[in-house]
Amino acid sequence: MDGTEEGFRSLSHWPGATTPAALRHDLSTGIALAFARLSPAEQRAVVGPFVEVVNNHFDTDGVLSAFALVHPDLALPRAEAMLAAAATGDFATWNGPDALAVELTVMSVTTHPDGPLAGALGPDATDEQRWAAGYAWLLDELGTILDQPYTWERLWSERHQQIVDDVARIEAEQGLSVKSWPDEELALVSTDRPITSIGLHHAAGDCFRVLAVLPSREGFRYLFRYRDESWFVQASRSPLPRAPLEPVVAALNEAEGDTRPKRRWWCGSIEAPVVEMGFGRPDPGRNAFAEDPDLERAAPSRLPPSAVLDALRSAFAETAAA
Image 1 (cartoon, one colour):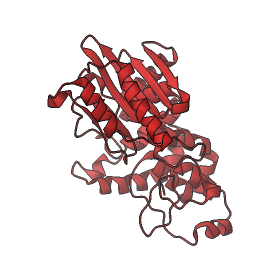
Image 2 (cartoon, helix red, strand yellow):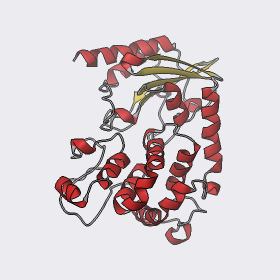
Image 3 (spheres, rainbow, N blue to C red):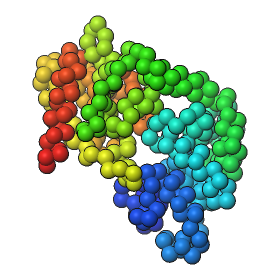
Image 4 (cartoon, rainbow, N blue to C red):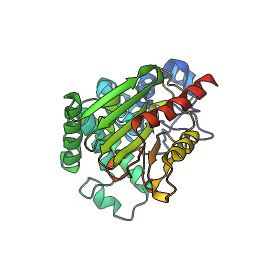
């Protein structure tokens, strides 16, 4: 579920998955729920016989997908809440405070020192041990968590409030401006403060290419992001293909005219679920999939937003023409 591995049948929204067309959904949780609605005979016709449900990573969409297959009787009545929580986790989108609470609970229980598994795992537990313990515990507890999403609020209350407040300011149009080019799936989000990933994506709407800008007296701090919706296989829409960012980086560095190592444009791998580009040396330990934009620590660029937009849109046009 929610992944691909050689030699395994897969029900997943990942690239390369063998999910039948009739079951496809933007989320693996949606695929699993569709599968759970089939009769046993229909399920066998789709994937053949199986006795195990496995995953190769740990996240909310993966856990909820497994829950749908292992406990369909508990999952199907809670389908709406499951889909909202899975989208919150996988796409960093705003689907309400309850969905955010479920996502934060799932992602906290295996690592928080006050979480339910802290005593059993210990500080030296490997990721694989944490994931296995997390799946085992959550498959038993998800029904309660979905019904009472604030049960484990003490693990994540500060983060929850940060995101809720950020979304509220964005919906009130306080301290930011947004300009979008829907045909190019491109949004420019200019903010006067730190912004969360969920807030940034909420401001960008349906645009999967997002340029965040933090103006300052020293210049402009930038982070461009291909959201992961353009990496997963989407059933509801077909995102535009990703244009390579290396030519954009080269053009921007030439325009910048600064050879200092910490004053260079950079980009991540186009193959990653979330791809970022920015100015100033990136944090080598940064996990773009899970972390908020870090505009405040980025170096200021001398280039105006129009120059960055022109370079990006030129790359988009070349890819579209090809």
